[in-house]
Length: 93
Image: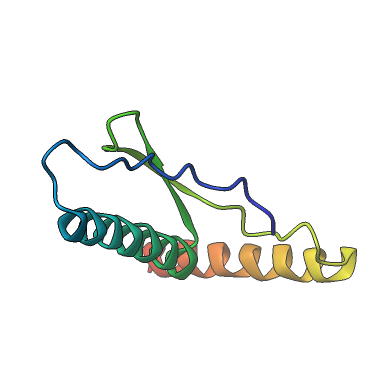
């Protein structure tokens, strides 16, 4: 499944910021981006941010992978229907 690449913030050294502090800030931002990517992969969601970097929305990704064959897509859809039917029955009981 291919997704568009995330925009990485442009990091520039602030005036009077030491080189060591700048590298630490770059390292921290890099780790945050990597952790967010792991989160997105683990929970199959997409985190949307605004220009200031604040989280605006968390969207679920499609459950059907475009690379699956038609038979696999059909099987997956049938499984989802059975799960929904089982939930409806358990709610009524």
